[in-house]
Image (tube, rainbow, N blue to C red; front, side):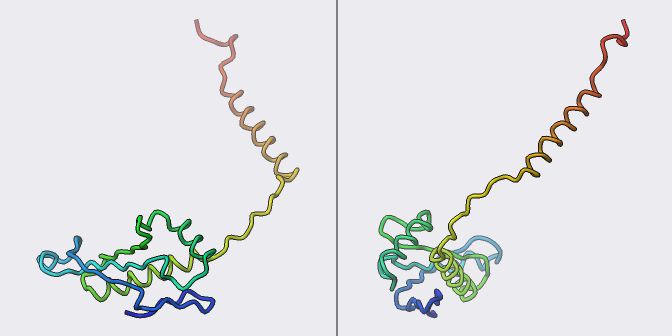
Length: 143
């Protein structure tokens, strides 16, 4: 297995990662019943070489993927080969950790412009006029 490069000089050693294999579903015919091609990569969040703030950010953003023991788990079974699945799982784990470590830009509050408000009201008036034209006038009803 290879090390994970999370950017900003942060490298997670391959020694911290644990890979397990199991039988996979999906394509492969009889191969599926014999070969363990599904790969699960696990890493303990507390073991990551990060400061507490970044660990907390990872725990918050990836909460649904981290179990009670604090282990982040990524599984791949899309390919027929174990090697391809392992590479895919490692790439996915690296991508997840990178995205979790990115700081979100604070949202700038904006106001709706006068022009946008005017267009919205004009559109509502046009819609109302269109519906008004669909009405049946009471004087012209057949009895």
